Image (cartoon, rainbow over all chains, first blue to last red; front, top):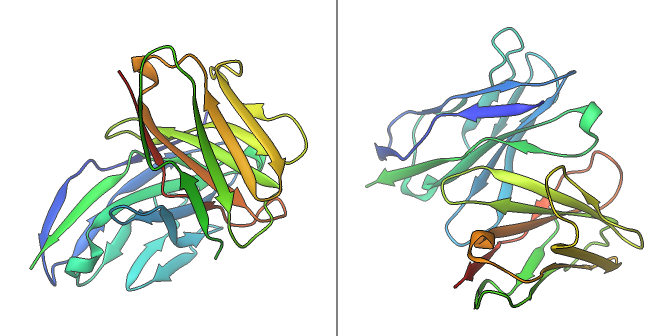
Length: 113
Length: 116
């Protein structure tokens, strides 16, 4: 079945540091890939997405590139802020599964001033 | 995007009682809603897909008689945990899909259930 694996947290960084959160997946068919973010006390929000190989999703300074050859969708940001402290979830959706999302375990990121 | 609310945000109940959790889509009519469960430090796991006006579709391993889902209107779905036990303690999250097969899902803030 489909699955998503992402690095365990917590990841603690200083402000303006570079952030990478690794995400790899296994899926039948050709999945769409997503990164969701959950700020404290809030629901999950879509951060970015990519629907086919080599697509790059970007939003709020975050980027992730759909790498079919390595089945990866790593999230990066060049200079984090304290406001980026949150839990980040990698997820996939395949046509075979309809509109169901399969999530990774989530990675908590803490950015210190 | 769509705004989704859940009520209550936290609930503590005694073992054997039933708990109802509401999920409301505040600014979209949602033909499809999803219910997820999240254990501490673990992934979100899809429990069921709730379709307005029809029976919910449950994922493998989810007891439909224990987790009752009602999607009676385009803005409200409810999840009732019947005869709750401590192992049902978890974080329950709903999401709505405004329409069409591949629209984005919008998530509620979640409900923390603790069964004593």
